[in-house]
Image (cartoon, rainbow, N blue to C red):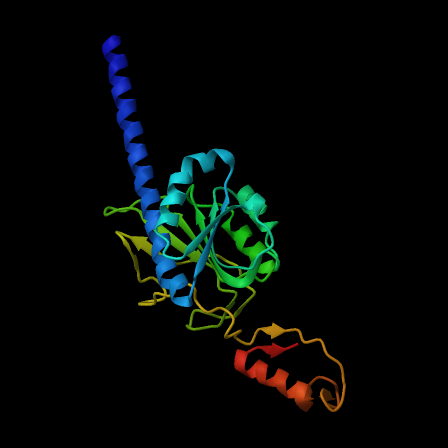
Length: 271
């Protein structure tokens, strides 16, 4: 009986040690991936200050503070570390956000405004506890406030033979048809998609082959999606000329021509 108990104790100790080692490898790879994104996407854009926002529950914060400190210590920029509950009005342009569960995201989301963040700034959200099952809801909420320059990092739930896989997610709100299999354009699409993976110390090509910019351009081409224009007839600056049956219109005047030019350059349909 004592021998059997000793065997169970040894097996439990080995299993616990293996779990701790695997967890350590996942977190080390997660930090390496985050550092790579900061160096290739934040620093080239002149990120003199990087804001590290912690939105973790108290228990996770105690367990993952070493992970956070490790990433902060590698930053060549000025690092500002803040708890989500204590942030004050300031224009934060380059941001690294630590999340452990959907509730912690909600705490962060309630703090996001034009007073606390540059909405069209750059955001890297790190899920420190693995895949987030409600990522689709997160992207939907972020797009509702027009926050779109955001990437999500998480350790994949499955491993591969040569190491840990770190997935890099984002969402592409406007997409056109670029293949015979595509039958409709996407307008305001918030579906999360993996755009790259970090394996064995580096990102590998996935969708943006050879592109070190992990923040793909999202609003330079709206792929003919409709954009509502609110205006009124105010000659000579804005003149709206309708067809005889009122099914078509043409904008004229300085303001009208400017809107038409924007429509052409950004490839959207005027509604």
